Image (tube, rainbow, N blue to C red; front, top):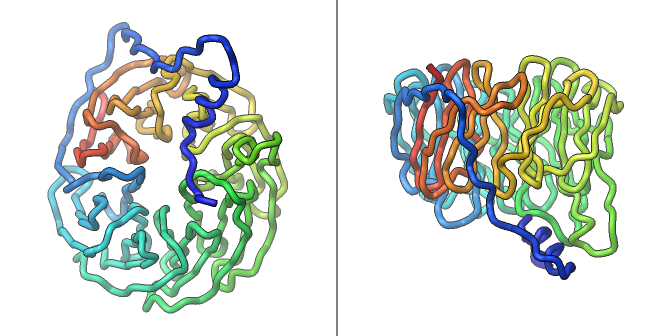
Length: 377
């Protein structure tokens, strides 16, 4: 069975199952009272951007630089503060993963199943390795190991030195899933990964030995569509807790050492999470933005003024949290109460790529390739 569904199908099927008229138009943008001024610190054009396919292409940061790649395989390194181009490298293959970075390398994966490591300082190719399927999420590393998650449910670990394979972990893949995979979280000793089965596993980074497994979501309903419970975003590590969200499942906090659940809330998301100031921020599958207390799981605030705007992952910067939508608007809210404080349209073709927050600066990469570094005056 073809392993591709679009989340909008769920809403469409739900609407078709009822005789009532359902409004599926995106929410109109509300006026912001006394909006803060958004400053463009620098901007540039990253080639063809995300292209015509539904890829995300996350950016990465390392040692004061920002790394971005377009769908054609053009990788560009910038100085984070001024946006000066440091180097430009072409891997000559379509890229779907975006960029990962660790040690002295940046990594990316291709639709042909190649994993490519580039020198972070020069852009020179250091090694290539082959995996069994497309790589749709950025490879991640800890300076010694580079870990890659593939569309067919496998985790590979390669030596950061020469790209030799160290281990492989395999898991079953349901018949129907969202297109995409979770991004592995790699620490010096442990790899944490979420799968389409709704489970999170922890493995030793050196040998790939399973340490614990925790179920985040349980399939519900009769149809395969109703039973999709993918974990499509990276586990988020804050202190001793790992936060994981799943589609049609739960948002959970897990002890990183033993895999025991600390708290859980019924939420559906296919986006990444963000955390700051004692909160965990989530953009739900129905396009609400919510903040939960990171320690207790109590809902702090919810903003539902952006429904049906196809929101991406929330990202924190300074004292704010931002989400971007399908029309290319970046909506900036207070972390404390979820109230809008500013808005800026970055790319008329929309923004799918997860934004990147560093200190007081927010980096936004639009679908057509527009890249802007923003802060709030």
